[in-house]
Amino acid sequence: MSRPQTNHTLQELDALHHLHPFTNHKSLRSGAGPRVIVKGEGPYLWDSEGNRILDGMSGLWTTAIGCGRKELAEAAYQQMMELPFYNTFFKTTHPPVVQLAKKLADIAPDNLNQVFLGSSGSESNDTAIRLIRHYWALKGEPKRQIIISRRQAYHGSTIAAGSMGGMSHVHEHSYPVYPGFRHIVDPYWYGEGKDGESVEEFGLRAAKALEDEILAIGPENVAAFAAEPVQGAGGVKIAPSTYWPEVQKIIDKYGILFLADEVITGFGRLGTWFASEYYGIKPNLLTFAKAATSGYIPLSGLMIDDKIVEVLMNHNDDFNHGYTFSGHPVACAVALKNIEIMENEKLVEKVNTTTGPALAKMLAKFKDHPLVGEVRSIGMLGAIELVADKRTRRRFEQPGRVGLMCRDHFFREGFIMRAVFDTMVCAPPLIWTQAQFDEAEAVIAKALDQTLNDVRGEIAA
Ligand SMILES: Cc1ncc(COP(=O)(O)O)c(C=O)c1O
Image (cartoon, rainbow, N blue to C red; front, side, top):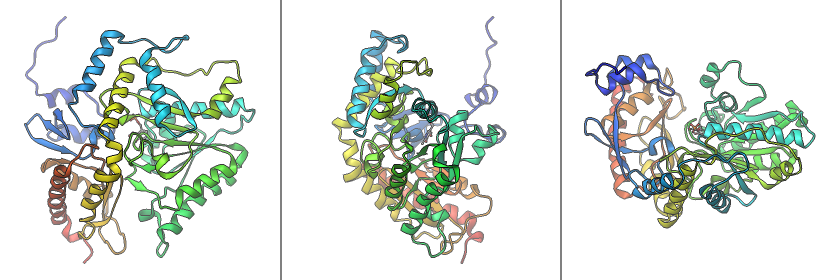
């Protein structure tokens, strides 16, 4: 039976039929409805009203090479015509998955030579959680179940990945949190540092929290430490220089596994293929997603240490885990082309030489603005903290209110930065040129002033 034709707008149809991720639907549907994004070209998006928008978030930390790249569409088309789908269960494989696995082994840290593929960061983190526990069981240490991660970490939205993450509003929906996870302080000096404590001292204290937690749980019960090299969705929190070397020492001392969640930092964000290389850390497991295909098609993966694979190889039984789309041929073909483009255009190197320094320089111009407590950046990740009192780091009442005001000003001016409570974060496509940095600078200057006008009465004199 065919449905009756309606004259609903896209926004009305959206309200009738579509539930959005991480969204207050009451508020979405009581306002003008969602903005409809209809087109992307290079670093720009267009909405259905014809407005051009500079995308400072690469979609959702994804479109590293920008929109509209024909080469990726052609790679997908060719692969769809050749072999649109076959699974990688039951002792089968196919050329794109093998080629991608080889390529990933080439660009990942030395000890990570094998990959288990999925379609989202959440899925690959679930794979990691299962593999970590399976590994210890196979090693004859089944009590090692607990994974320590950090408060405000985001590892995804499935029940296990959401529990491994440290966001209380995510935990609320899956209460009780899936067992076997503990959360320690995140290495975020601006929010967690004590008065008079230097950034470096705080970095050591935050690392020491890992050792304290291991000892409190009992090292014989600890399976792994899981962390994003730079906390992304938590607010682009960049660890002090003392943090990662100390964390790595503690991991080595207690012989636990280390899962680096590089779903945001992977594929060049910090000027190296993976942030683990940037920080000199040695994860045994590394998850990636998002920019692996520049977001053109879903693909994620878990890179695995040779020593873990060796344990699997020594046991003649199945790892009972997998997804229909593990190693989807079209996604693998697109990822291969995406990596090739990044290599040919030297986008990763440019984060070191050009784009990363340009982002840092642009953001630094706002550090003296009356609303701004701190600006920080690393590679092509950046953040501007909005505070009520610069001197004391005092926040605004109702966290998130001022961030949303500022985000709306950005939006109206044709620019996207994300509000994490009152921290404005950005992760621009790696293809930005000086023209985009200049454009962003002008909008940020204007939007910060507009936000200041909105909250002038709440700012410390
Ligand atoms: C660090 C990190 N890990 C995992 C995820 C989850 O990825 P997905 O949304 O693809 O499941 C995200 C998503 O933003 C992320 O930022």
